[in-house]
Length: 277
Image (cartoon, rainbow, N blue to C red; front, side, top):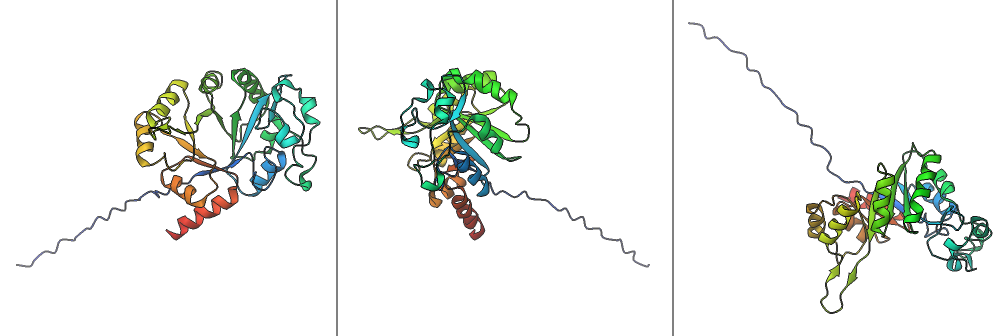
């Protein structure tokens, strides 16, 4: 009897494993403010030259209801002459030089408007808008965003005032927002506040999409991040991180973004660390 050889078919299943590396958004704090005067158009343009994924600027409402880019409540530190921003008109503020304090080569930099900063943002990059005025600025921000074309860029609103964030989510529900917080330590107990649970609660109550935290490695660790997530806060970014060691630490924790005064330096440090691993 002749044996019959049955063909053997081997089914090979190829499983594609996704790349698990997490890529942080590198945000230039007040522009490339290590190299150029903060919150000026030169600083924002330099940030794009340094391949930042986003820029962060600070915005106040003026006495004549215009939105301008400056960090402090008054102009003394960055412009030499003291004008209270919310008590001054745009025309008065534009007469000041916001660049020469950094170096002579930056002289004649005006305090920019919201519209001017937005127009520097390249396609597919992120404009991080920190609101320094209280809730009164939100309707004017809404009007500016309705007036200006931002269809090809990404927006993120940030603010330390959770009431402002709540108003932004009410009037601008389609714009991502993060509530901001720093940390304070009780000298007696050593307890840091806010806690992860408190952060998650504020994020939830304000309707924010996440939190922007002071990049404090004494407070933020894997347990802290996990506790926030359990409370419903799934996204966080950190500021202001200029140390490669700290940037790598927060990268490993899964930070959505890292805000830095030195975008090119921090990006290179993270990429070098990734390549080494």
